[in-house]
Image (cartoon, rainbow, N blue to C red; front, side, top):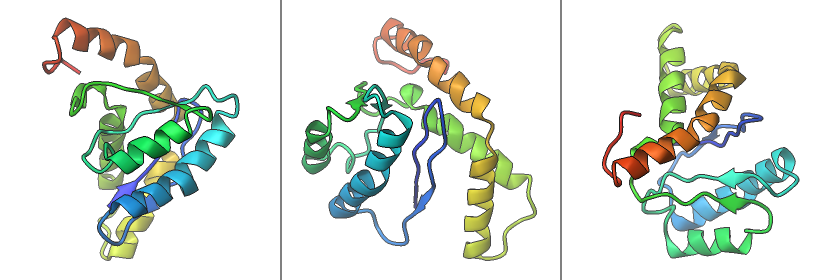
Length: 151
């Protein structure tokens, strides 16, 4: 499993998880990686964190942690399990295509290297386009009353 963070301004690091993600491990990721990324990239406190609303990410402990750090960055709320609002799905798709263009990895470490290299080579314009698409995605979601949209 892989966790990542990115923003309009910058790509964070991919975090490889060799075991099942638990509540404690997720809190460690939030405190060790998300918090530092947001404090560097959005030092003004105006950054917004968008999680994908997976069950673990919507847990009480994760929600409490996000509330405790609301002065450091905002948490973007959207309807649960709404794939149209998750720009990370588009980023993962671009990452998959970039990895597929490479020679096939033969080992787990080779796959990890291909993922990291491809992640670092994703164009910043991709992030900016996706982030700037959020108002349109939100409007489409409202028009569809929460049903799937064309995004």
